[in-house]
Length: 401
Image (cartoon, rainbow, N blue to C red):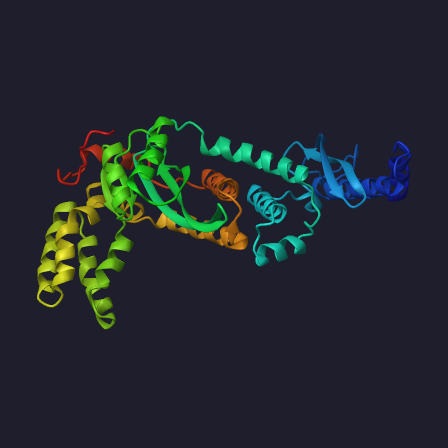
């Protein structure tokens, strides 16, 4: 096993006569890593041992910035498995982006008291603009590459939604819509395929965003799931030849607004009978029957059900193995919550570029996690899409613009 005193002397002897404390720090941390790896392997360097589990496989260079200066370390690699010391644990991309946004706000003199206090707590006061610029450039390159990557293959399902963030523009604080697009491909994987920023959810804004997705290769879309924003609905009709699914969760909230709070449970249970049916035909029949039963007491609710049947039940015409994922924007709602959680730390963004930097980094990391998880949808069921019962009223056949 490692002879600490001897190895420390050897490591110090190899230093180039620079700063002594920095050399000692490098030597100590190197010894810590060597000891960790010996414990993982079950044997020291060049040592034969029955309990050995793997072998060393060289080193990789790693720099560590400290108060003593930059320490140049060599992290041991293993043939099987991996090793990475805790004291070198890198910040995630989103955490780096958060730091960059806070730095940028502090330097620009536009941060709120909360952001300023956070910056000071993180020891960011006095940081140079060149340091901020370098950090922002690195993050922006990775995020932009991710957000503008080509989309390959077919993407039958697309979820769209927007969350609102505050940003400074021309000396004013305004709200901007951050549009997030998620899609599932025929391999059963879901990916975050786009992020857009705009002043509102107007049709022209949505159309530009959706056309940008198609230009990058978004193809084979059969169903688009979103809330009932008029501008978004119109943009979907013009850009996609696909069925539109109105988010069932949002619709139910709108529907129950016509009912007294004490009757919410009973009315919701009655409407859900339609969702429990095995096919689109049965669901439609149940839907209309429930609407008629509710009409005398809640006429506005019944009228809403009459005009929104095809939009809310659109997902019922798709493979039943996929339906639990298709009836609402819940997959993207959870993503929006994570976005808001990170954005709330900043409060008011200094500019739109900082929004893309931070939110794009959050999406980048979430997408990576999705790719290492199990498939989101059953692959075999995609072949059933064109063979499922289709109500012609459900299909949006307007020629894409």
